[in-house]
Length: 145
Image 1 (cartoon, one colour):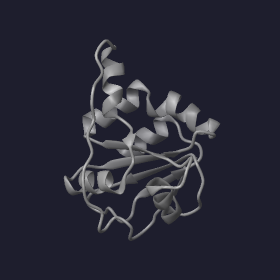
Image 2: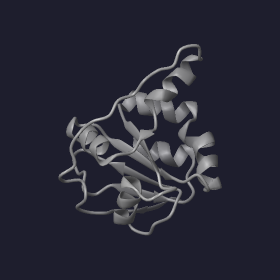
Image 3: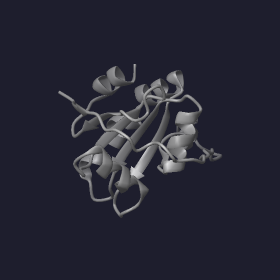
Image 4: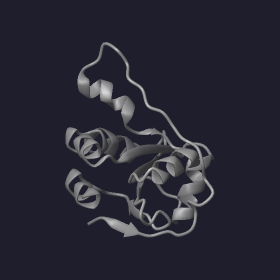
């Protein structure tokens, strides 16, 4: 079972953008990794939502073993990366190892715990779907459909 919740009122007022890149000498999937899970910033979130894109934010920390397992087995799986491409979903990674914009957003979403995912719909950006703890490729696919 996936724990879900909603949070209100924290997207307004953020502006800006972000970029993605590729590295040479890697397989296609490795090259495409540069397009996914860009560093989180309020500006990146607002830019993606303003352009009509759904955004998924992964909240993680260097010390979080479960986060690393989910990153390797779910978030960077071929199935999830293909779904991100197919649906034009922007993926951001908020490193909560230290205080910053990512931890600010995580606190606004509720309990400050990782692993957590937040899925922002551009039609209702102030009420993201929040997933805490355990998730699978199947459960995440269902949420992103």
